[in-house]
Image (cartoon, rainbow, N blue to C red):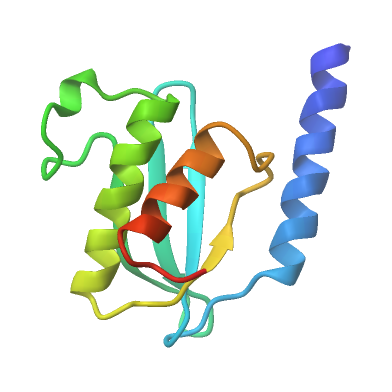
Length: 121
């Protein structure tokens, strides 16, 4: 029963954040998804409903991708890789969508690494 309550709170957080965050071509939405094993990042234009760029822990462009997992160290690596993918597509400013996750730990590490790599939130 306790996990049902936590899942409901997470879903409510996700809906609350998503209602306020929307991406455009000039400033796309940086959507972050954490599973138990991997981290996924997408840059989405919500007006056209297209994904402009994406990266994840299973991306072939990342070195030592077999060792990456859903942890803080990997979040920093994926944050830098996501920023590079966005900058290669000409994206400098984004709107951060944490996907219902609280802004600490992995989420904060990924966001800080992306900022240090050149993205503006």
